[in-house]
Length: 78
Image (cartoon, rainbow, N blue to C red; front, side):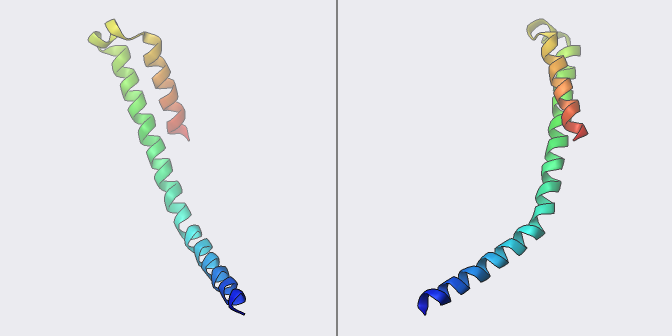
């Protein structure tokens, strides 16, 4: 009898946990999308600095800047 009561309590806890997860999932998705877009923008900015600012041009390959811009654009589109 004791084990069936514990099983019943566990089932209720899982049911509550599923409900909570469903409510929090859109918020987590929104935050992830926002983080992805902001990371993309940061990579684009860093890539443009590497390509266009003279001190960086001397020390960093131009392809590195172009690659960062490309990755940043893909992240912003998601």
